[in-house]
Image (tube, rainbow over all chains, first blue to last red; front, side, top):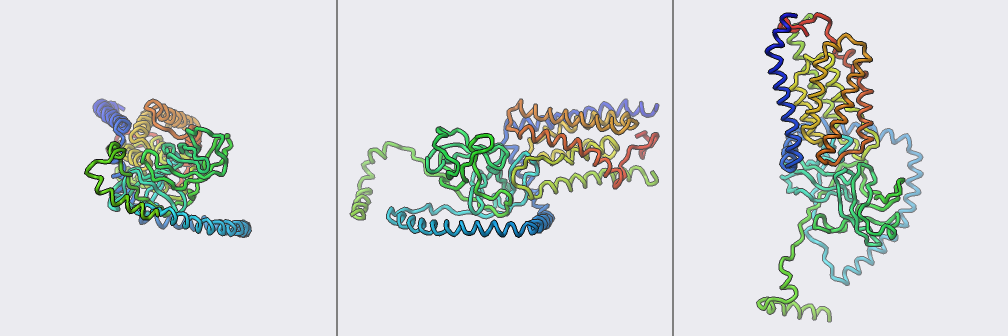
Length: 304
Length: 179
């Protein structure tokens, strides 16, 4: 006991001081993160970029086996699923007919209008490496990063609908904040009524719609697509359909399959050109008028 | 304590690190990408508390800081806050570890439960003060309760499989200091 006391006398205070310092450093890190989030998030992205790909060799097989077991379990419900699928297929055939007709009509209309779809609309496909590892955060890590030209803020889709937005890019990895994350806010427009709203992630599978000007004209089943508002996102990416939640709030049933995220497309979205000088639009510069003249003639010619 | 206590202690530290790595790895697997209505227990916290109550000498402070700061970064938590709270809690428990050695298990469990409750509330309070967007309250409460409930299970597994038990009265470490 006497020895113990002696030990305490000189080791104890120093140890306590060092531990106190460590705790202070941690709190300071937290405050710095709160004040200057982008810098710390870049550090986080760099750490994840180093750590997670080195897990990949083990993660891929384990994930594969787990999914295999899940698939195997689904065999038990095979008969019921088969019936459901037949019924669904019947409905789909009707829809396919409608879609084909609409496609032809759309093609004709586009041809008539001489519309050119954005040619720079290309995508990079990435594989999901890891999820956020916490029930409180909804994000996934892709195996494409700076090296592949990924830029913060680009939208990410699966084959059908919007998944989320790139937030945090490392050299070989990038993080996608899903639409369901509590920090996700996406400007959307609800289709036949044209109401603009914001899709607010709240950690549930069906995120609610907020800032809706007139909820009366929105009905369950309406299509929800992105808008180009604020130049954040390209317009007209499918998000999902409006549904009425249990709490009588308008929510969105997402089109993308959030149960199984495996291959995701990152769309290269280029910022739209900004119009800086309104004057020349209203009254063309004198120097520009000769150059414009032939164009005007051409359009007249095609019109005629 | 037939083998040298120093070697045993390093083995204990490595075991803890390996368990923490395995748990991190398991949580990062992209199996569940849709939001859950249900939160699993924070196993890394439970394991850390079991170790710090039973064998604090296996768990130096820098190791705890390393494990938790890494998981803060990997799991998209605000970096540093949870680590600092866990460090404070483990230090408080460590100071009481010799007292906890002789109490019945129920009391030990209650002490740890109060600790987990306190840091969960402190975490939410700190996040609310700096106005960070937070997860739903029910979800963090579910996780807290699950972590408290899983504590005896972790104690049992650690005791049966890894032999992590409270040091016997009068046990000494490699330098002859009392544990």
